Length: 522
Ligand SMILES: Cc1cc2nc3c(=O)[nH]c(=O)nc-3n(C[C@H](O)[C@H](O)[C@H](O)COP(=O)(O)OP(=O)(O)OC[C@H]3O[C@@H](n4cnc5c(N)ncnc54)[C@H](O)[C@@H]3O)c2cc1C
Image (cartoon, rainbow, N blue to C red):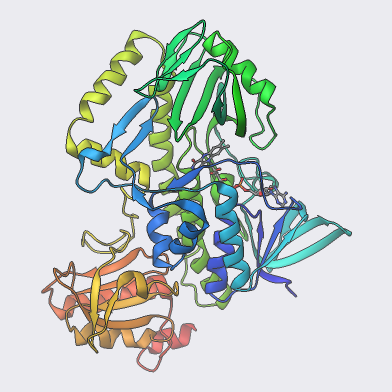
């Protein structure tokens, strides 16, 4: 007896995205969130990377933009450690970015998930989790007291201090950096003035430049936009920080005074928050029927990539959980969640750890590293590589037996397509329903015929596109390419390879008449 197919602990961006994707895959989904009300303390002020494309494929990007994100744009510049990466020199900067306060993103995702039929219970804290061969169990403290929920699977999307992860005995090794960052936005008060170049002039101190200033007591970061200043201080402090605990204006101004060595009067201050930096990654993303995703699985020592990585975890996991619950998951499918997303998390860890070295180093050797790094970023290829790494789009999943096609394991490009009836469509449109897609781009009747045995579980499409990258694509619901047919490859090699990929990702064929072995196994 289960209360839901999947219980999700935590209604942050990861948990809410997972809930929506699970509903698209037809699973009964319950989200348990300890806070009685949606989050109001601001964290991220924006996000971007691969998830922006995925949201567009799902038809959700317009809703996110309508929530006040401003235009989705290719980020012209990004801070990397204390170094500014200037992507405006590239014709097509690799990182899509949106500026949207996290509470508003969560509102859009919450409405979307609930609209699709997910149940979200706020004020319900998970206090214990357990599992046996048939179910995962959560003990919950709700407004009316303790109760118990059973599900086929339980996913901890409960943030960096994940109780689910700890209760499941999943280690979270890594490093805590002894520093605290405090940030806020406001208008300048007193006699402080903004100079023509965006620097500010502070009475008793003199000019303070836009960007990062190292003062010997910490780092002072300044940005000026539409009459408001954005300020962040960084100080070495060994105190453990709860990112969600509120910060007072007095604490913020005290930190500015210590770092800058002068008072900086501010009015209309908003977005007061503080955070520490830790680099941690869960050793395993799955323990039986209990899984972790988002910050519960990885905590990066740089902001700007947490939402992308967490929501992409959710998209990777949802269809695999659905396959397991619906009973057609091929052996090992759920295990690929750890393999693929731990790999993706490690890529994020690589670049965010590198940022720590560029940011924290305070000796001539570190100066030399920063200078050399900037020299390399003058070249197009390394700059593009860094952008793709930050966007989380630099890698292909290392899929077993996917052949040598360069698209296998990659995020499906949004090809513009002409369907058989002449209608214009696109890969993005085909991925809206979050279902597996077989896309024949070259009138390959042999491949289409082979895929037909999976029809019903896999959507079959024939279309044409200019400059086709392959004869056919097999695309997973998370929009990653499971298999691609090299143009002109002989059918006697392609057809068995496609069938193997269909078996590997989408289980035994629905039409078993031509598959006696699959029929016996089913
Ligand atoms: C100051 C700051 C700035 C940031 N800026 C950016 C940025 O610009 N871009 C970016 O991409 N990322 C940024 N991040 C990181 C980003 O906020 C996180 O990566 C993101 O919130 C992770 O989402 P999540 O859903 O995995 O976890 P969370 O957002 O932490 O959500 C976890 C949820 O689980 C709930 N929960 C916890 N325990 C329980 C329990 N036992 N029972 C029930 N519910 C529980 C919590 O209440 C919470 O709602 C920033 C973070 C900070 C602190």
